[in-house]
Image (cartoon, rainbow, N blue to C red; front, side, top):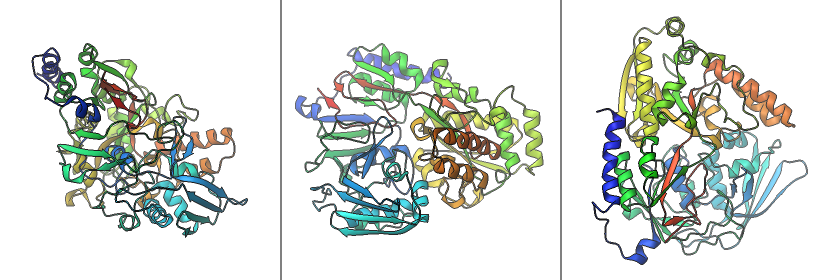
Length: 533
């Protein structure tokens, strides 16, 4: 029995449960209505939203830590913790004033010095933060509610840097926590967001719990993505970790959980037949599959080895492994940017088009000096997207004559290991797999994975001046036409040098019970204004 048939067979348990074959747990009606039970995309194995960039951590962090600004559904920055800001006429001095009454979960007030320490830690890890750090003159608290950021040169995209939804977001923490080394994980989880993290109920691999913060004061504006009034309509949110899709499907159908973040496409027909469940595309901006290479160590420190993969790779194979046979759920992607958005282009994408050429790929691999050494591939098995990509990639590398060292692990361990810069034989890696939300890949501002600034780059640490030059050209562009010129050159430079291997564009589903309302489409699950009857 293959994987797809096995999962579908397991999901049948849910159909029995939905028809009364299995009993749902007995819960008091009032308590059940105040508790939202959610199946996240992966285990919350660690909980530091600055140290790493895993979406599952960012999604939990958005409940616990608030931000100075937040992007709305038009990707426009809006004030969140900030009451107002001023920028000097020369663009060099930004002054921010916090709105009154902000509190941390331990009852202490949010002060300007907390924000300064949080921004210092964030700017050491985030690409836009690193750009700001490079031109920073000073970042200081002026009084309890005011801080000032003075720069050596203007940075017009300041508000986007502070509002963006891609990880690491600039979450505000108490000063004592924010002073933790940005390359070490925090050990205390106190924020000022709408929900408190119940550390005593946290069982990594099984459950994470959040409770409503009574002293949180939402903004008056309507909620829109990370902006506006984050009104919590439930008292408690329980994350139930279910890496097996058939188990998650059965639990949703049986009413044991209320919302499943990312059901796999194979099970969607089963869920759609259940009158108690709603299924929809989670985010119309979709996702870009990522086959991430380590540029520090052989063989992929040589661009010819990286280009060999682009020459041989079939994006259709990767996409069908992720989404199945529904052609409406995927597109070939000869580049790095989100299809259908203003700056999308396919410049330099010929290497990913047309018939795949294994002979040419093998020739490139030989020219790179590859001679059969193990290629360590770290593949998270509890993420359907990463497992599917890993299985297809292992087969591809073997066809190219590569010696595959396949490390089957979980997403939390992948997050730990991909941060290791040591050689693969000493605990490092050559390849891991991920994906990037389409909302993150519209332009270079929030696209961490496209950057190629060496130690400041995302895991894999590409150091490619030609790519960084075009990133800079985009930041300095004054018109849309100038942005498009820079973006075409950026797409080509990134493909020529293979920052990473894009495995295609795909859409994903989300599913919830009819008793839940207020779910909106977007790049992460927004729990505010979600109610349960």
